[in-house]
Amino acid sequence: MKQRKYTRCWILTIALWGSSTVFAEPFAEGPYLGQTPPGSTAQVFAPGLICDTRPHHHEIHGHFSADGNTFCYRRHGYVYITENTDQGWTTPKRIKNIPYRSWSCCLSPDANTIYFLDQLSLRSNRTTDEPAKHIYKYCTRGSQGWSMSQQLGLPFTRAFGGFSVTADHSICFKSEGACFEIAPFVGNTWAQPIKIPVEKGKLNPCDPAIAPDGSFLVFYSIRPGAEGGTPTDLYLMLRRADGTWTKPHRMGPGINTEYYEMGARISPDKKYMFFTRSNGWNINSATNTADIYWVELKEYLPESHR
Image 1 (tube, rainbow, N blue to C red):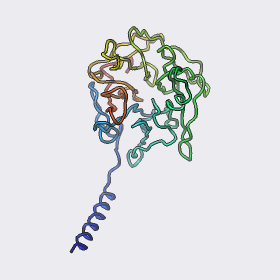
Image 2 (image 1 turned 30 degrees about the vertical axis):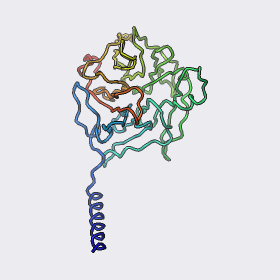
Image 3 (image 1 turned 90 degrees about the horizontal axis):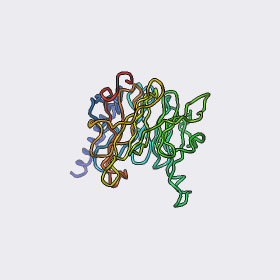
Image 4 (image 1 turned 180 degrees about the horizontal axis):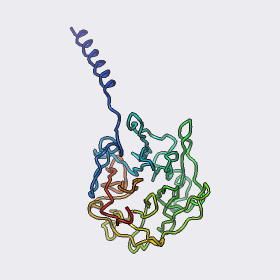
């Protein structure tokens, strides 16, 4: 009798597996992974698909390509990518040539390059008295898959933190002294960076997320007066028609909370902002939780910048 019972269970298991294979749905379908767009209050992006909302899981730096058909993000220290095909979005795949604990990953507009900060290689070669920096690196996609990572080189040797890429391949980054700069992409290379003046006041601007057309940027800063000096909020700066920039102002309560908001990215159509909200500063899968959120920007931008 036991043998018959086990045989029935095995047959049932095979039948169920076969059914799930035949009728399996794509990972996701539709623009923005088929998610219902948010309003002016931020919502978790693609829960159960991209974001694991359970405790001690984290995702950060969600970024779409210019055509909206490739999505790149960081999960538990590794970089993943998913692409929109005729059969729907592919299951996220880890880019193995990008090292563990890379930071600030972002896609080139054509989705054939992934830029990131390598936090480990420089740390392992520096003295204890030397300030921590990051090495800007990139991987390119070819017929054989993603290349080994390479150092980006000049003019990004003075970079001190996160960065983002515009629709014309220009790169906006944080430089020494908590300032922002943007390196225009000219003649298939990056020209001398141009400083973006930031009236910092008590702010410590970090991780600039520039709009695809360069018309505004969002950054995070430790909240002035915050107990312990660690909670962070997101701030917005607008580029005026004459090329000057407005003073940074804190984005509203639909975005900033008592938690930690950081790691912003702007959607290719400028309609949405993606960012990470965490319950702790040291994002570690063993102790903290962080998820990618998205929010509609219409309420936060003047009509001239939408």
